[in-house]
Image 1 (cartoon, rainbow over the protein chains, first blue to last red):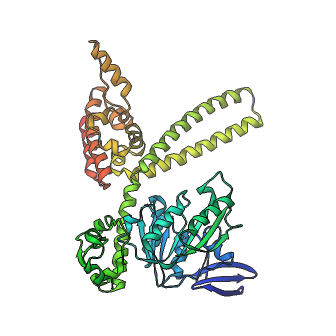
Image 2 (spheres, each protein chain N blue to C red):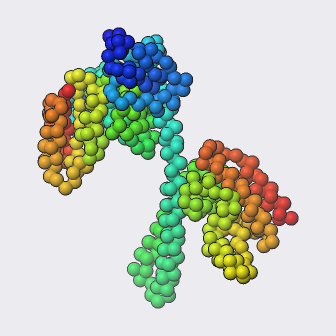
Amino acid sequence: MDRMKVKEVLHNVVLLDRNGRKILATKSRYAPHYGEKKYGEFREWMASRSKLAALILKEYVPEIKEDWKILYLGAASGTTVSHFADIVEKGVIFAVEYSAKPFSKFLELAMERKNIIPILANALQPWKYSGIVDKVDMIYQDVAHPEQVEIFERNADFFLKKRGEGLIMVKARSIDSTAEPKEVFTRVKQRLQSKFRVLAVIDLEPYHKDHVAIHIQR
Amino acid sequence: MWFSKLSQGTGGPTLSEYRLWFGIVKNGKITPSDDFKKSFQNCENAEPLPFSPSEVGIKHFGSLDAYFSALRKVAIDVVKKIIEHELKREDRYAVLLLKSLDELNETINLLEEKLRDLEEVKVSEVTESFRDRIAELKRLRRDVEKEIEAIVSKIAPNLTEIVGAVIAARLLEKAGSLKRLAEMPASAIQLLGAEKSLYKALNRMKKGKPARFPKHGVIFQHPFVRTLPKAKRGKMARFMAAKLAIAARLDYFSGELNEELAEAVRKRYEQLRR
């Protein structure tokens, strides 16, 4: 047997040291969802597949509590959500996705986990699901949409608690493919600053090119 | 508490009524909906709610656990329904695949012809690799055929049962989509793919010349039509088209297989063969 050192960085999130190789993983009693490896009770969390994993590997660890309510915009097929669900095991994730195709894969996850509420809707129209989603502790957004800041603000207006937090994954190329990424990030940050407190802006290189994570608080 | 605030009606008349996924809250009173799936998809509120739906829900469902497990169940049911509906659009995929298959067939035939010419003149390394590439294309063609069969038998089980996946896919292609095929009368389905000869006949008729109308289009490819004597093909085509029209509607609206249709077509064929 090889030896494995385990270091907890967040509730149910660990850094495994397997013979010198560092692996991010979440503690989970569930089977793999998207072909990730399992090391005992841990599911590997690949930074190349998930921007939240990349953020944690960049040593920025947002303090997500195990009983938080999360509004997740852009759930897609559920790669990141599956790990999120491990973290907030006593909370609830309202997962919004617009396109039906990846959501059929997501549905498998939603049926397995008790703490995920799947919602197939356009995140640009939060009023459409306003009678479903609670006030949440965090809005996590990964939508790759030119209007993504607008989307975030609208959803924050509807659902984000006072002092609630937001994690916004910004892809420069999908907001403005002609401008310099740095310029795009500055613009996004300035716009967010007019409404929220920007806690940090973290570049996700080398895991995701031209992406930053912006952590805000209301 | 939000409850007392609501009953004071601070927000004006429109603001004190809220649509939640499990019912309507008016002046602090819950009127539960009789169909959660319906109300789940119809819980629009123009303004942010001054409370969380779960705070009200806990009163109706007894506990927070009961509330969320009910919500989760409804949410999953609704998503399932929507996704199934979306899957009907797979007919587009099948049609596009069929078009690519036609191109592939044409390409393979053309290339094979050229290969034969080449081989007669000289067999070289290039000729060899030519042949390998064509074999590769043929493998691709098999894969495409398999995929078409898989998709079509899933989205149109009744059509497939009657005429097989290939002709079913061809009908979809000519009609444009499963929806349009479902909206077609049987007489149009009978002549799908015979448009050219139909309009030729119509034109001749307009000019007062003798005209012969086509009896079958794509469905002629089916052995039940093709193998009958000429005089009986029209009868068979007409009957088959009638059943196909029903099948297309079943496939589009319910998606469940009705074996009686294919059975009826087979019986009619036995009858006509005698």
